[in-house]
Length: 251
Length: 127
Image 1 (cartoon, one colour):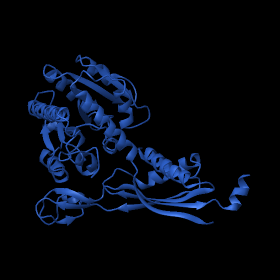
Image 2 (spheres, each protein chain N blue to C red):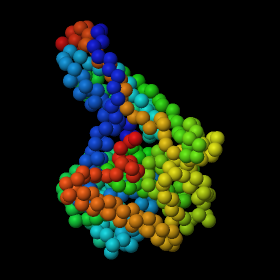
Image 3 (tube, rainbow over the protein chains, first blue to last red):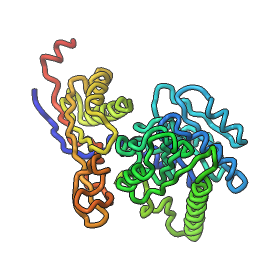
Image 4 (tube, one colour):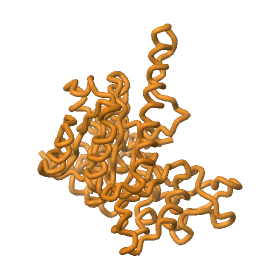
């Protein structure tokens, strides 16, 4: 057998998802959407937190939701109860959303009128970390009942996010969850992540998280306006600032 | 479970590379680098790769070689280079500070493809 090509190359294996994510980002920026990807294990409280966020922020921003679930519309139905439009993506057997699934929705021009797009990923602490969707921010939830060792066991997702929210903190007196230990592992992996401890049930800590979320959305909107102004003057149109934590592209 | 999509990506990239190269050729080996801080399990990837390769015309005899890359972090305080260990909560073992950046451990790349002529024997077998 004759060998003809023995090529040393460097090709990103996830390049197709990364390209699709970048394309989504362009759509988001064109539409004026600030997109936030919420990720956690099943049952950590993503839907509950989103319900609370939408209720508190809907007077301030026009919010829409993309709901990723393997089967069924249970979560989508709950979120629709807030009055925000919810678009369901049923992933079937896939354990995560990928950028092209989100892209198909974006091409239907459903989100032109909305300022904020919450994306609830499929409950899973492993796969969603490998599939950026083009979002501007990533929020990872960890509930008190799951255990404080999760950032050590699933480091990738905690490393590549902008905020970590410890949820169900009303359970802290009843479970072995050391907030400091969990927060320390997150800080060691990801010193820039903002960390919150909340209980949607009691309302504890929720306002701090909402404050952070609003500030991020407003900053991103201001940034987008600034870029539009520059573009209108015939300058360069910078879609996103590389100096920010740009998790779409691996460094 | 996403190893299936990763295997599919590798195979279709290799397949189109061979297609570009010319006729009477096939891929015989592909080498990938997988960092420790990527959620990819080598065994599952091998399994998925072997399960899927019959459906890729130019990859039916392709072997998958995996190079695992150890993670190396640089610490925030003193720029020490270290391997992030679970036991230390991923902090720097010397000064206990956080990881500023990863020098390695986040790779997920194809680094080498070997393309060979389809040997005559096999060609005749398939006729």
